[in-house]
Image (cartoon, rainbow, N blue to C red; front, side):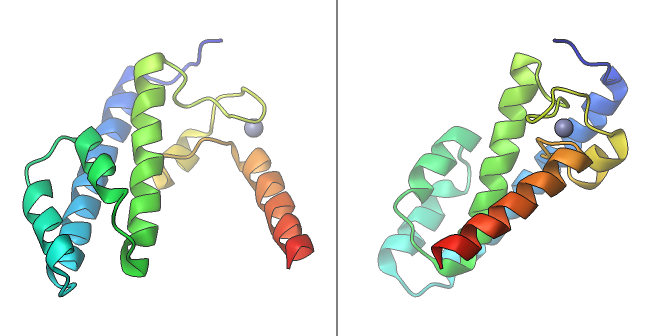
Length: 132
Ligand SMILES: [Zn+2]
């Protein structure tokens, strides 16, 4: 299934994602530097000039609550880059419809349209409620 995402929009969203990924990596690096943990400061040294893929690999060994959210967002961004290269970016995971451009502008790594996302969040919250 193809989508009708304007190539200019795609470029714009891609560069937004690249800027955000750089910010996140820098935030994570700073947190590692300040962590007072020898192993983490060593990793921080290594990650400075890394490619995106190797960065994620290195982070597998890091278990710091402060960077959990950053890492999670970074993984979503990585997934968005993958979808860009295989041509499925901008299509909803749930219903295969094009995701609204307003939504992609606000959340460039979104993988669901507004409707499917709210259904997903409702189910997700309910599931958590059951297990607790
Ligand atoms: Zn959808």
